Length: 119
Length: 115
Image 1 (cartoon, rainbow over the protein chains, first blue to last red):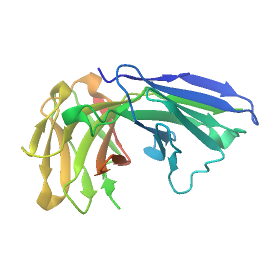
Image 2 (tube, rainbow over the protein chains, first blue to last red):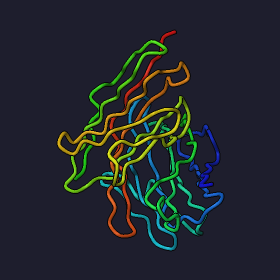
Image 3 (tube, one colour):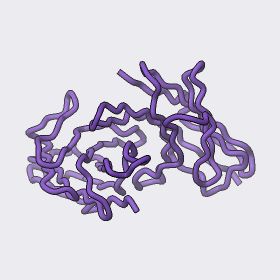
Image 4 (cartoon, rainbow over the protein chains, first blue to last red):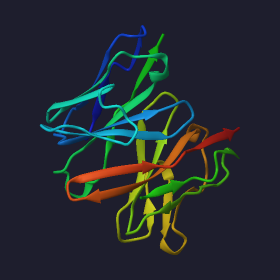
């Protein structure tokens, strides 16, 4: 149980285009999902917290107009990188929390990540 | 604000040797502590977690960690390392306020295992 998927697993796009990354909780309902960014050989940095049915909460320094987050259902959150540039190239990882998981309600279950390369 | 320090960027051990990865945290209350492992190009897998209770926590793959409040530490240990343990290891501290939760990760320790 508690499986999170991401799609696509990798994407290459041209500079100036927009890219959408999906994060799905496959066997539980996730009222809260998180989006992280990881640069090569570095740690995960939280970008934003996505709550179902409401606006995402962005961390300081993250451009909300650049990284659009939509959490339209209890099992799906999307991250859209708008007008992507080479500096947006990174590994994007989502995670989800199952508030009904009892003793595991404070765990985050991570997706496998999406590698974005902007040419 | 909470913070996590992993002093060792890179560690090399021989297969079969014991392993200890260090993690120190800064947090104003009793923390929720986690260790995750990441293989190259992959997401994160939870090894173990500490919320409360017994300070020695057992995890998957033969790993364990000990919460020491007096030292603000949560070091990860394994008595005998296998070549498949080579990966990046992240310590994290969780902040939970009602329905909100936030993980802060350390910078990671890359483990190399020599045969």
